[in-house]
Image 1 (tube, rainbow, N blue to C red):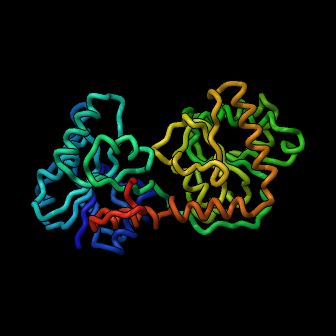
Image 2 (image 1 turned 180 degrees about the vertical axis):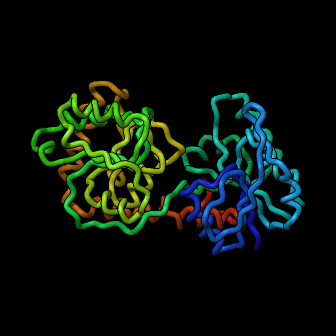
Image 3 (image 1 turned 120 degrees about the vertical axis):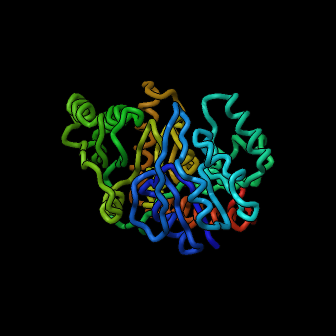
Length: 351
């Protein structure tokens, strides 16, 4: 079976997914980005944009060069050749849309729902949260392949004293609130614990200044960008909790995959990854208004709770087990296989 995936570009964290799908099928990824190293085939085409809408040059010539059994296209309305790919493929080719999401315009979402129902193509959603928004508006087959990231088997028996934050240092993550809460922790914890930032970005200098103002400069560590999974495993093995107040992205899956519970705010920016935070199993969600004094106290209380449990390996083993069931690369691949085969069961379809 020959599978074609249509994307705007290949994101680095998706390479393991494409490699695994290539092991199951013969996979080609057609995109408009830079070439990457992977076991799958690539077709790279040029694009042209007109305002928010992007078209791919010579797309239909490329599609007619090889017969594909299944085409999985990016379900983005702003890339209409991909969104409406069903109308341009031979009837024998099955078409699936991947990554349909809601937007800021209710009118556009209604238009999307109309066309999705007309086309009747199966849809693979990034998360249960996104799929739930569409469940009662669509008649299409619906699958959930939770966004995942490859994580090595974690180290459970290390001594844990750190709070970790992995990802770019951008204002949307509200790391200023994290430093403020960290500096307000009880003295017995603050004398031992460290706050470790793994990543770089526009806010680093401001965060360093805030750490000095809060008199925790020697306790807040900036390690810069690290992508090596072995080094990341070592960093997570020394952490008793991960915290990102304002954004819950792929760091959620990465942290839980390493066995480390994740704290974020219930209103954090997310692509659906926040679905992986299960109270008492994989982390906690802050409930009080973001940036309020009450939220700072709430965050401190949660950190103290995870600090008190840091010697219990069951906490970290349970988080990893949840990752393997619901957030792992294998779970994501399994949902794709269900969609490609046309089957439905409780492992991949929204129920």
